[in-house]
Length: 225
Image (cartoon, rainbow, N blue to C red):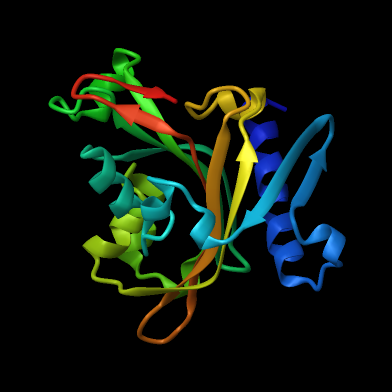
């Protein structure tokens, strides 16, 4: 199994653990955090309140759709890179692990050109399980055949959403995460999990777990802080 696949499987298992743990009646000794151990890799996540989110995460992680908030904050367009995907046709679900990539150069703002020059920055790791039964064909085609982020596809197709079961967490950047997103080893990362629903009929659209590194950008470059 490739390293990408191992990491993605680990992340999806971690996501499932979070969903399960957060909805359970945990004893007081366990309410401060969730721990998932897969093989020799240990991820420790501590649940926090919205009021505990520092800037800029207090803005980014409270946006209805993460893509819109990230593009507004970094003033760059984002494109996704899929590192793992799995479709279960009989259930109508599609799951994937993605990186949100942006161009280091704000003025160029071209992810494809930046990738060719190794000048991209990963500003998000997202794990998402989509409900294709509740999505129109245009969105599904975009998910399967483009690098447009899911949130932007929803906006482009006029799908209004609500958010439910939202919670926030923090975790430490380790070597596994640093290999994928731009985070300093042992720095604190912040994230959220939530469910996106259709505003018109309340059908669930996606279960999402998102992790953000701390990134500082200038006109020409971005770097972890």
